[in-house]
Length: 381
Image 1: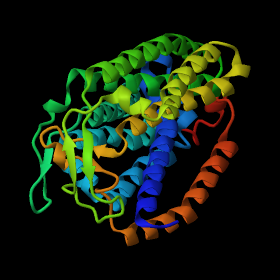
Image 2: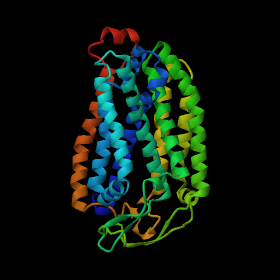
Image 3: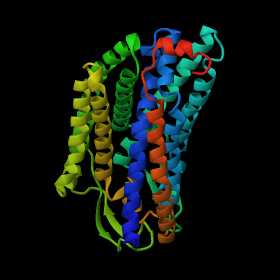
Image 4: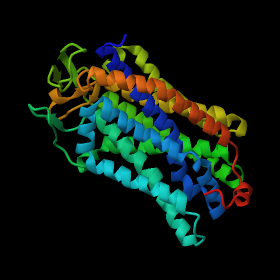
């Protein structure tokens, strides 16, 4: 049950769960901040918007930290390749995130409109730039990255930051931004009333078709225009990690053939498209349909991430400059002992985190209005 091969698959699933949790929680969090300058027209309206996520944004962001830590512990070669080769992009994400704690905590400390407006745009940057860059990262995971390992298994990145900004990767960045903003608009409509609620409804109506169109273009591009490498020979899946213990050809049978080899994987893109479409249809209706709309939006995001994961499997990182150096879950993991220790720690603490998160949202849930913000002006953001 707990052999090396099994643990590698289990951790592939665990890290997928963490990535999904991050997308679902921080996704609407980012989206709310992206909408802040456009949906909030007055200072009080913007305070209403900020406080819909004000009590939970820090907890949501922890999923990103957990994702990075899990990759470091479980897939050290992947961590080394991403965080060294994509150093500039990762720093831009980090710098954008710096606006968030300062913006939330200091925005309402001074009543000067110029001060508050500046922090509003800071929160906008902190909510907009990360999903764009993370979407670009996903696009480059599908395209492949220019890296290789030398004979001492030291990784060398052969590209540059500007090389990441290919048309397909930028499209993925736009789709990621649309997805987070659409998810955030549904959340904002659910949690607010009055003018903010009405403007969030308008945002849902506009963003839904744009997101579906972007997803359709990206999907057709992947299936019709991207090459997918293929593993032609591999050592045992329970062997020690070594990316050279396999043979990879740069162009294989293609992404569509990969999905058709196990047609059940097509459930993922179907879930992604249908979830977003149903969320858009229900999100235009009255408040009673909003919980279901948000649920379908969440399922749509789950479907999109599963599509990426299933499409890449068993690859974790594809190398365009040296296909042999491509990393898979069979040859990029830590030792069996490390995976076992990390597994038991996760089994104990992950349910606690999930239960606590559920409790926090249940306690803090409810509609936010301008009257409630003005009433608790000194305790809310």
